[in-house]
Image (cartoon, rainbow, N blue to C red; front, side, top):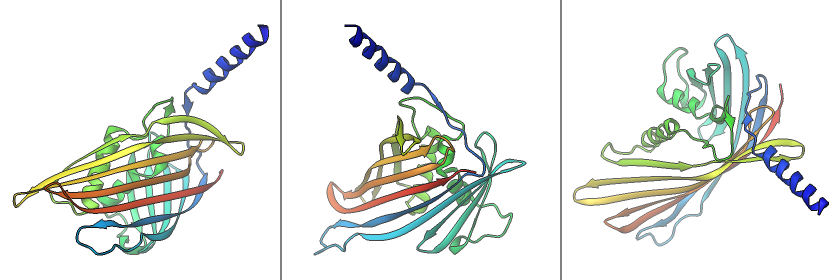
Length: 258
């Protein structure tokens, strides 16, 4: 009986410790190097005799942070089909993006020139999603403000018409901390669903894109360790399926403390 009580007390203490809020601090000078792949392609096309296989593209990404008088200087670089691209952003102590600029590839811009797309991309840097937060079980990775940012970015990047009504729902909660080779890892996992409707020339178009997402961060430095996305976008017109496109991305990172 005494042993059972001791085991129960130990279990309760362990669960209480796991449920304690976790504060995320970004370590200036820490860096990550990531590798992964993106897979995209048409899975279904109405009246098409066959669809091509998914295209797989290797990708790399790096991130460094350093202290500057304004707060932090973030530099995120990566390989894309358009070449090497670097995004630099000045970020305040509270995580506000004050300036951002692309260089390389097709995104080369004049120094000092304001760039809305660069500001949007900077706000999506993974480390900003958790920087300075105190996480507890169930806390959402994306705020309502960030979800709206996704709506605007998707509309802009995909060239969607103004008449398209687009909404995104996210449910990506903090699922807790785990241990990976002695490293404490903060984990998020859940779903994101984008839905759009448009009416043109008497036809009703419906777009739906449910996705599964997961992201993990290093508790010691606040840097991302991995992320994965698996989504399927389908389009129907007047209730008839027209197209389905698969989009998958995985990335794993090695963190170097400053």
